[in-house]
Structures are given as structure tokens and as C-alpha cells.
Amino acid sequence: MGLALAEARRALTTGDVPIGAVVLGPDGGVLGVGCNEREARGDPTAHAEVVAIRAAAAALGAWRLEGCTLVVSLEPCAMCAGAAVLARVPRVVFGAWDEKAGAAGSVLDVLRERRLNHWVEVFPGVREAECAALLKDFFGAQR
Figure 1 (cartoon, rainbow, N blue to C red):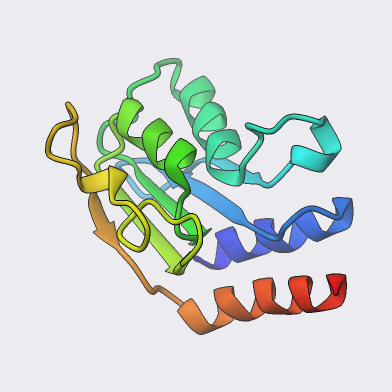
Figure 2: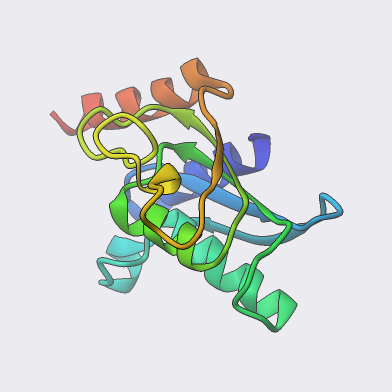
């Protein structure tokens, strides 16, 4: 989670919402990292998780991220949860809950939706207070 938080802080340099993600390989090595890059790229799909998943797939030379773990500072949204499912990520670890757009148990539960072709093991609340504080400070400064 420390690497995901470092990526989240990197997003602050572009004025984007501070969310960071890391994809770890089966051996625990880092395959991909990402932070929100929507503002920098002008791309609504440039969420931290998608950026990290793309980097990991490129590093592996394969779209299936079997045996990998996605670590993210905020509960994934529906798009990012869908990307994890489609990439066959078996585990997602996240920090803060997203009560407005979360899709790993708070608003929706895409990651564990039994009607889909792949299910993900979810580990929520890792360094939750630290992850939530980063977002609270960001949005507090915006107002």
C-alpha cells in the first residue's frame, strides 16, 4: 500500500484526485504502477487502476494477470473493478472505501458478482485512515 500511496501523491502534481495503484506479480514484484492521469491525459479512463493494469499487462506481454494482486488506495469504481475482472486479477487490496462510487462492496460489488466469468478476492481497509486522509485533504483544499 505504501507504493500505491506514493503514486497517489504523484497525482497531486497534475491536480488530479490522489489515487494510486500497483499491480504485484505472483512473486510479489512490481509489474505496473499508476496514478490518476485523467487531467494530464484528458482521458476519462486514465484511472490509477487502469494505468497500472495496462503497465502490468505490457510488462508481462499478456492481458491475463493471473496470480497478480492489484493494490489501490481507494475502492475501485465500476470501470476499474470491471477492468480487474476482465484482466483475471485474483486479488484486490484497497485502502479507503468510496461510499459514492465504489464497486467492491460499498455501492456495487462488481468484483464478487457471481454472474460474471471471474471473481476476485477482496481485502479492504488496508491503511484506510491514511488513504482516506489524503483524499479528504485534497477535496478540502478544493472547496
